[in-house]
Length: 335
Ligand code: TYM
Image 1 (cartoon, rainbow, N blue to C red):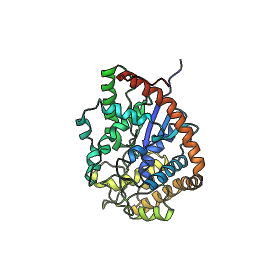
Image 2: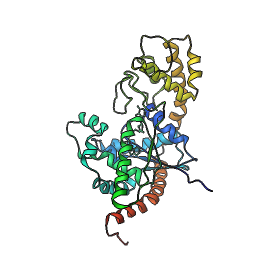
Image 3: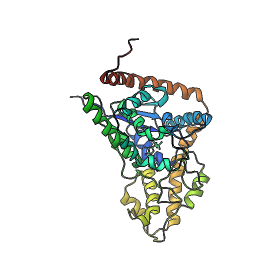
Image 4: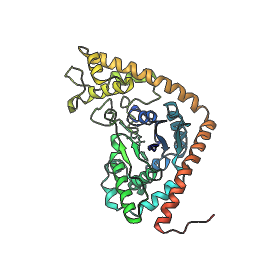
């Protein structure tokens, strides 16, 4: 008997330089599943414009993100890597799903509330954001959505939308599940371990960006907020969030067990912890940064890879959107 390979879909916004939270929470999982699962990774430019973007910067960041994902281990031979706006079915699917989703489901989304607070004028697209995300996921008959903790609510909403559509129009969508790691699900800001590391916070020392220089990484980790307790161990205590965050970063970059890590740090101080984390992060990011520089210097090659990805994605998403349109009663175009 052949076992059906699991379908994996995830997305990432081209809205600023990636940080180690994106890498440890999401990208590392995507890379680990390659080969074993059928992977679709989408650069979500339609999502990015739900808050104002400068067009030239968006274009540059879209290619930079493609380069970074490949440099970080996404292999276009094994993963369908593509840009969301290259596959029209995403926008079309969003529209149809808009028309089965009650407004109240969107108004209670935590990310919407947080992002809306930061905007002078809130765009309609920002409220609609999670429905576009649902369309992304559902078009590919996705089984698993590997994401960081902050996306859990969106994937749960996607499940609700899929079930509602299936209830109204008959079995159409696979109901996906979020896949969230225990460590790395929520990498915290180095300068404030009560807040999530975020792409949109540009204060120095907040994050480690994937292409930061070793000196910049050293600077940020040296100043990382810890506590006055002094011992080094994994902990869920809010007071220990800074130390716990550093230990999780160490854990995910080395692949060592928690017991081995705690044993390694017995009797050592925070200076040693920060020094060891720095060494591990600098060495892990070095090859990614070098490969990124090479890839980013060849935009034609990146565009070629993205064109292949878009064709592969369309081959899955287009028949699905036709099925959806037929189910809701549209006359399908014959050409
Ligand atoms: P985005 O671009 O904000 O983030 C990409 C991925 O990185 C994870 N992440 C983190 N993980 C751990 N710690 C952090 N500090 C941290 N910050 C970010 C996110 O959880 C995410 O997995 N809405 C999505 C993009 C999206 C999507 C999709 C995801 C669009 N369509 C379909 C999955 C499926 C987002 O804004 O991700």
